[in-house]
Image (cartoon, rainbow over all chains, first blue to last red; front, side, top):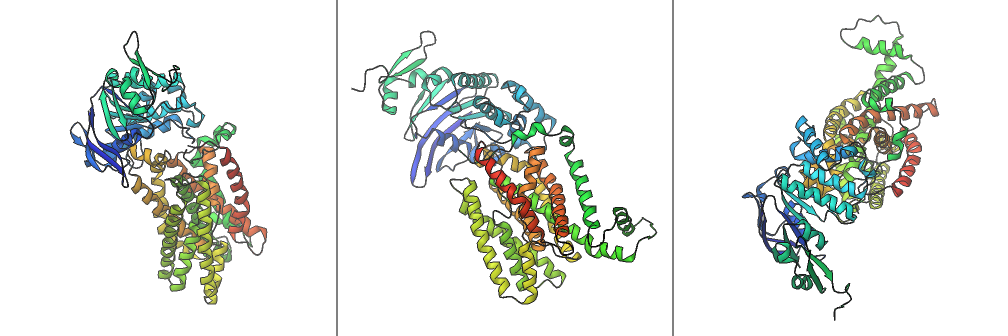
Length: 263
Length: 358
């Protein structure tokens, strides 16, 4: 499990995350939501160890990540970065094999176990048929599955995703998220995902953490957090929320869209 | 968007599958042929089979009756063999360090010459020569150390000048490289003009890109080259992972800062030794890794060793041209590589403009 305690992050004198505490249980998917600049990506990057933290601690199963080397951390925690156009002539298989870096020696000689792990991950993400293709030739949605596969190849108990479905169409969004959800349950993964689309969040996540200006506003089930008063205040847009007739998941309508204005 | 350029995917389908299958065998054969012809060519042509017999006769355990003239053996052993070895080592060093700089900067136009490192190494080498002229072995061993210091200072300076938001874009890299390289070359010329005649001649050779003669440079270069290229060959996996950007490389478990420092030091050492004894030779470090990438793919674990073999062959061929074109006198090999490499550079630039970025 992932436990964040009193995490504070600053860029120079500007504090961007204030005293954040929460935890994510194994098998649980927690979605980080909040307006642009709320600190979602900063939080993901701070947990992954690529930006320094000012104070606070991050634990995985009681172990403080600050005490681990880069390599040891990469065996506990993997990251799916934001969707972007990938170039380069590496094949899908080569790119996914690079997820095995924490298990390889510095020469990068891969063992049979590494090859088996990559093969399994390619199956789980339905990428087998692209294995030999250069990643630059894949569509945006397929490329994002490659980045997911690369993170899964790290075989970590904790998976962080930083707005993984931005710029993807509906089919590829749901495809990627359903793979993550299935694996999270099957392999008991601890998943923290920064997301923008609140309606996707309410269907996908077990819990939702709402960030605003670097502060944790509330955390709980989608029904508890995605409520008109929370969302309207944090996003500074009046919204109306109805619940899905079958699942009860909250669905958001900005009032501007419904013609009620801000008035 | 990060500024990484993808490499010429569209050429791949036209390649002969036979050519793709055995990269090491093919490059090794090419190197052996170039090596033999480099020794054969000159004012007198010495047939390859005679060369092989003369070389074999030097090895213990071969009992070969000499059926060649003594002057052939003298020409080969005293002049052409050391020259050929030095040229091959220089080409190997420039191509492999070029490949490493391209991977490190994630930029297809990084070349020891274009990013100013070669000029910085030249300045360091000349500075070392002006302190202690290499008239003994100690002097010969000091020149590459001076070149190494010059190269490291240049690469760190260019890297920091070119860096924008954690990335090294093509334009700033080349501009910073040209500016710093020009500054280093100007300082080198200044040192040359205020020096005595012996140094003056040495430096003008260095600036034109002409390998030194005799066995001493080979002996002095060899240990540094073996270490430098050996370590470069081992850094392929680190370079592969770095292609996803420093942040993701770290998330994948690579100690990014150590990897960068390691690669900068080793690539600069390799470049510096080449420059110290062969002068400033451009474009080999650009052209060779690109050709190899087009044919055998982007995996740096193969790209670097293949660049070592390919770079040696390419510079040997350029050097043969340099000796043939104006025979009996010879051109500095740097002129031949520039004549062939500059159009190639422009071709890559044109392609890079319309390639997809990371």
